[in-house]
Length: 279
Image (cartoon, rainbow, N blue to C red; front, side, top):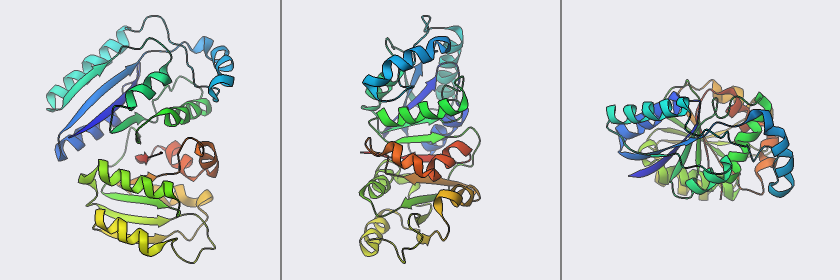
């Protein structure tokens, strides 16, 4: 049984995330911990962010909380979460004891979970869209377990897209996905080499095939013949029922990887779940 940390921005309940947990629980029982982060004071956001940036390294990392954590909206979302878990036979816990800024609390909670689920469309959607994505990046940066970013509307995955570029980070993500979600490894799986158009073949092909076939029995190798920075999101969004598995999101490389844009584009498009593992 795995422990799933389901992070809700206090005022926004992600039905897409809960539906994913529900489907996982049908495949193998899980324990889900609902973390209800409180509302934030958007009016004072940027003054806090500017003051925190030098110490923390990210402009939007410290979002100030409103004083009334137990607002009626948050309380309603907690009641909804509890009733849905009870109705669907899901073991659950609820955590609301936030006394400081949001991201340090998420960091601490994620340390004690197998995987974190975040609703990519709703996570502090009150922030302007560009800054909302920056804040989501900050959340990815601080988590101490792999993260699944879930859109609100998607097909539950029957295909795994393993993004591979020959690096240890991409292999790490492939292994972590198999360890955490063995119930999904029997899906049709594409090991996609999506890095250098000039490369003639997969880096360390024999070794990676030897490893991946032990976990993903329905494996196919696929070399993307287009520039992934321009066309990867278009290609993958056309594949219904797909989930992207991506690495290279360790703390030192996070911003550089997002500059490649193709994984960021997939997240922003909100079409399919994205699994991200960093060391």
